[in-house]
Amino acid sequence: MAFLRDDLTQLAAYKSPHPTGSGSEATLIQPVLDGLDTNESPIDLPEDLKAELAEAYRHQILANRYPNGDHQALKQAVVSYAVQSGGIDPKTISLENVTLGNGSDELIRSVLMATCLGNYGSILVSEPTFSMYGILANTLGIKVCRLQRQNDFAVDTVAAQSAIESTEASDAPPVRAVFMVHPNSPTGNALTQRELDWLTQLSTDILVVVDEAYFEFSGHTTLAEALSRPNWLVLRTFSKAFRLAAHRVGYGIAHPAIISALEKLRLPYNLPSFSQTAALTALAHSDRLLTQIPTLISERDRLSSVLSEHPYLRVWPSNSNFIYVRLSDRGLAALTVTNQADGLVQVFEQLRASGTLIRHTGGGLRISIGTAAENERTLTNLQQVLGSKP
Ligand SMILES: *Cc1c(COP(=O)(O)O)cnc(C)c1O
Image (cartoon, rainbow, N blue to C red):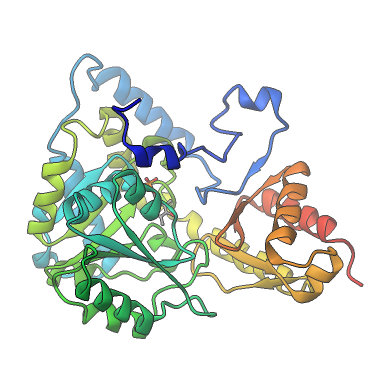
């Protein structure tokens, strides 16, 4: 098949790890699992909001017509939410600072196309981190400069700086975009002041992308930077705290010149009418939808403190709606494995067999916070898999 790019043979299609789906037939043939692997909200939209959406579909949305293509109403609602939640001066933001994507994944791809396509540049990521940056870069033939995070999962800024300088000094495409998750996934740590200082002193020839998918859980934002710097983009999503993963809506906030480049690359009708309506409804009821956050945070802290007491686990503090763990040396010995990866596979698979689906990623296990009942089963199943304490 000479018409296909050679490098595509090296890549695999993205497979959803989530067999429970949204009530799909998969649940008929597989045991129903607690889906604690993709960090969505465990709570569906309230009934009355779903009813409101159903009414909107019946009476307002024209199925035969393309959706609104300029997203003005939703952009305006995002601006209001950014002001209300981010403590920023309303005079510093307008619709020109906002772009909407079919999930923030679409925006990540547009950023890659805008900054790196055709060997114009490469990206820098610090691992473990969100895997989509590297995956999407690879599909576009874009080089990825991968660095390891420090033991505390902060970015090794010295190594990162020298990696950037060495690409500048070579024939390789220069680093044009640095991707940071704030707080990071899968490790849960927010950017420290030292990391932020490093990002702010980067050359303005490099785009700083701060992915704030978990902003509502951490309360930390860099929106003020995105609105005052020419090379800073904040990405957010409706897929996590806003309970709209099914609708695929994400947004980016940045200097108008960055936004206008991203708008050139997006597909004309990238956001279905129903998704726009859902996001508008969620923002109109944001106070109510976000009341679940303190509950999820206290569940996270409860789970985290119970797991921290287990001698077979190492648990890291989290600023988000998930917890990252690895096996301790005693845990590896108890499972009679010699390396972390083998132990994690064992725990992951036994947990899945007992009905709890988590994510094995980035050299550890990432456990999403679910409902209280799901979390209770996570604890019971994990304790069973790890065996009774010696
Ligand atoms: C979940 C997540 C996203 C969201 O992607 P969508 O395409 O908006 O669903 C983006 N970035 C990170 C780090 C995430 O964890």
